[in-house]
Length: 328
Image 1 (cartoon, rainbow, N blue to C red):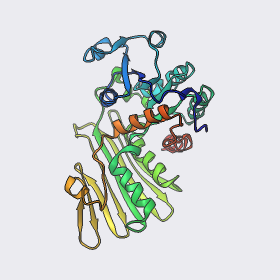
Image 2 (image 1 turned 135 degrees about the vertical axis):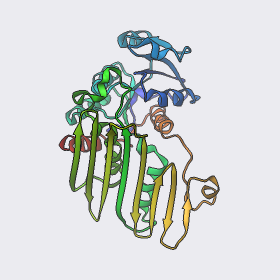
Image 3 (image 1 turned 45 degrees about the vertical axis):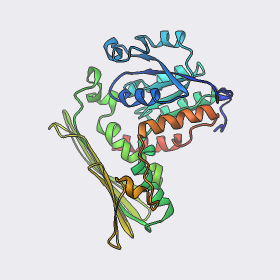
């Protein structure tokens, strides 16, 4: 891959013009992140539902993507569309020399990964799939502890991501397996993607699934050399509130993130609460108080400005994740 997309040359001092397409649920995390940056301007929004754009009167509004591309001089496009539309819109924008950040997953199909990245390199632009756990401080901490061996070897882990079934999606696309892929590609993909990113490809997978109308539950155990990770992901028919948590057992400590608090239970009896700023200030272990969605967008923007390809999310890893998900 190119380390220096030529199309990014000369952008270091430029105010980057950004457009966003798909003003649905996840855009509520992306739009404030763009607006908070000093060297970008989110100029335009595109959605087939004009009412979705009304809360943002300071942006140009479009219901036609081609019209937005013709009228706006965009440097970056942020794609927050339904999954089944990601690749086509990304390729169309990159063919016009526009850098693209795209919500996860890139597609339901492993074979869509290479054409998207090939288009990026052929047009000298940056392309990144927004796999947000790679930028989430608590999850980055686990990768750091695993890589450094601070608490010894990793022995096992648990990762959970539970919710009621999505009632909010436009045209109920989330409940259509052909368009969304259901729970594997909505919630489970987050934890699997983090595992592949942090630990490499699993050597074995064992899964159980309950799949009913408006209810989808997966429990999967991923085996890695020397340890295993147990995961569960759900859309419950019952109105269960969204929860995400993990527990990772190392030789010398248990690291748990539950209820919004990150605690390290050391074998020597000490408990570190990384959710409080006072302990962060000790310098023992630093857990940045950052917004992961803002961090992934900032990282992508910096790559565009600095003329380097965003390699924190690698196509080989995306293909590995999609290959596993399609086998579940």
